[in-house]
Amino acid sequence: MPKAKPEQENAQAKVASEEELKNLPEEEKAAIAEIEAEEGTTGKKYRLSNPDTQYTDVRAGWTIAGEQSKALPENPSPETYQRIKQGFLVEDES
Image (tube, rainbow, N blue to C red; front, side, top):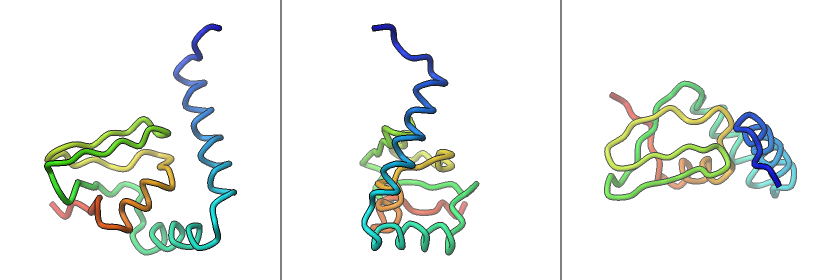
């Protein structure tokens, strides 16, 4: 079977993320909505609270490690929002 083009992979990842969001428990949906509303994550940069670690959002193809500071991907996974809520990823104030 031929490998999907990168655009197709991204589209498939978005569909999976959207489908996964639909199936999340109401409590998790509320937590994600709260983070988005309070923090307005779009365009903000985040860093790891512990630079000795790394994090990869496989669905979005986004990785952050060490001292890096990066904007969130366009369509972050629910797991990424959970990492923000738990303090594993923190907003970079600099």
